Length: 53
Image (tube, rainbow, N blue to C red):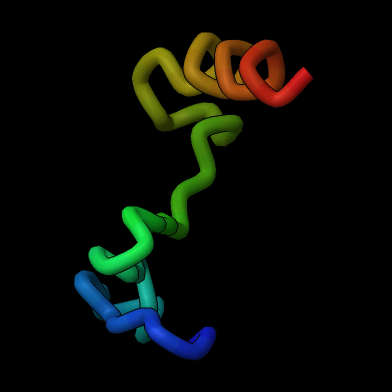
């Protein structure tokens, strides 16, 4: 875990699903929107790429 972060979510298959550092307003999640079983995953991924560019 990066310094200053705390685990805010976990699952049966992943020990760290989400992290946060509220003091710096930073958050992270473990999620794979590109997989076929994620509803609207492709659209979410395309929006993410557009924002990053």
